Length: 277
Image (tube, rainbow, N blue to C red; front, side, top):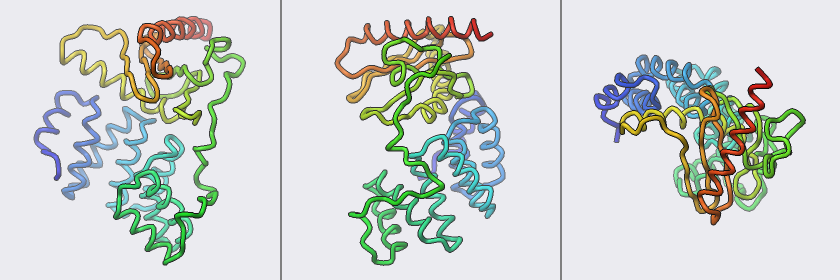
């Protein structure tokens, strides 16, 4: 069901910097109101130029407007920021299929289907494009437009990295600026896959939402945000006014140990930023 546009519009008017623009523009798009959806999407994209979901939203609106070349470019940007983005793989798969390139379409649609195995409609689309060929037991081919994100491993910190010499810096500490650009460090998901770039792009929005929530709840200035997960635990804080730092640990460690590790990383980041400036 399409979300209540009036309620979303009120939230957006109260705080134009909120990520509610994603839901509002999508609701307008689904109702066929493409011009206001486009205006809101572009405004949000200007605020969050490295947020994959903002580019995905813009691409869907462009596709509805039949500007398929621009939509392809936007979805390609999404995959460079977040190689596992389901919506971008679906969108590019649709465009390739429409352009009469079934092999490229099949690759992207199959990636999307394997990322979301519960989507029966998507699975049926893959099988339709495959034309009866057996594909599910065959390894995915390497396709030039997309890097194989599963094989990417977070690199060791290079010389000049703010966390050089800090234990776990190549997988456990990530420093980004307000626009979501990675400044230093690297982050690995459970299993060692490098998720530095897509996480950096998302952190800008997370920090904005944390600030907004603290303001609405009258919590005062927020200090740090800690999340305990089943695969990883994470602590987010801001070493300076225009940067944010994410530190992670395997589950089971005390929260205080994670917070101490994050604070150590923040101290190294501040020293590095002072030297750089």
